[in-house]
Length: 488
Image (cartoon, rainbow, N blue to C red; front, side, top):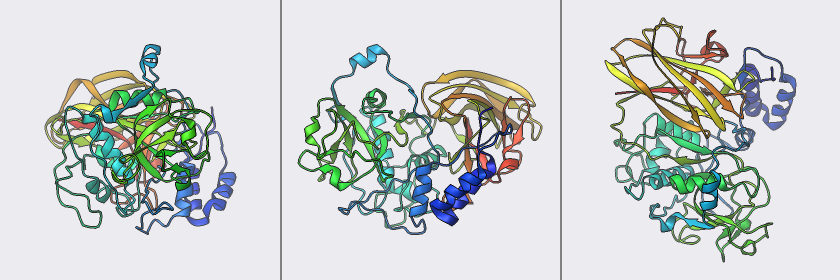
């Protein structure tokens, strides 16, 4: 069996960073070590997140700023992406059909550029821009960044910063999105009540670029779905204001969220302050207003060492009507913050729920960080407490996913339940590229809010074989599996 981190190791690492800094992290890592553990373990948090945690005062709500005074605001996610695999590449015919230049600005697929002002809210602007682009040209929406930054549900204030996983926690528990007209952007004033306008059911992650030429996956997503949210490091010295171009050959931890809206394979390498090894650039939308750059846009070299290389980029499949389902059953209010595994690509996960009404369970959802994932979903009804595969197996569905991401799987057969009846969702996952395939929410000091990160007994279960099950809260208190059920 491959070596995995034990549960206690993840806790030691987090404590070391909070209490002793990066030196403590190194000592804790060495002393805790790796060991064979047939019972499995949690993944180690993203090193970029731990470095950020060490160097920032979370209690402060002052936005991070560039040297020029522009607000930034991207915080590295706690989950380590751990991926450098292929994901969904176009077939050869699609690759051959990709033009040398493609620009969503000429496709009526973008809403007007906006300005985040003196607030670390770039992450919400990047996500809202991607969702709005996914719905165009058929419909024109303007989602409220203000509502997202005030209701994300994490430990710090609206202008401290955020990231894609925080946005997805907000969106997938159906807190948003809401209309900009209902909650206008001000970031200094409290927001008001508003109706959720869309349900986000599918988000496709683009695996990390491996090298300067590994760009077809991002290009495919832009062409297929619209604007793609991503992160970058911002250094004003790397920006050429005469050509609105950016190239940083270094690889720091940073700091800004933007959206990719196209590419230009022939964008000259001579346009950059420091000359990269090849021509070509992504066309990128910023959130510093239309008076900045090329009407709010700029060009990032394919050779940039951070862009698309330190965490996922993400495309939103067209958000759905809020009438698609009436209720979401879930425990992971704070969303995806960790992963669990058994030192292999396959694991089983299950959540047990009690029906709040007489209704039908019609779909389930989960995250996967596998570059290719096979799944088998089973839904049982009339369970015995603590036994996720007890009761009646009502429906089963298997399938494959070509990319990491968040996916909603529609069931083959609707599962009718009555008020007060127990039911369970059981999923077998085989996720290429990771030994930690089970997505989890864990309570994290300084990051998640205790009122949202609430685990309990007889809710979430893990198994290496689908037969012998362990209650997740016996391994870590206040932890949940990120596995939802949708009813109507």
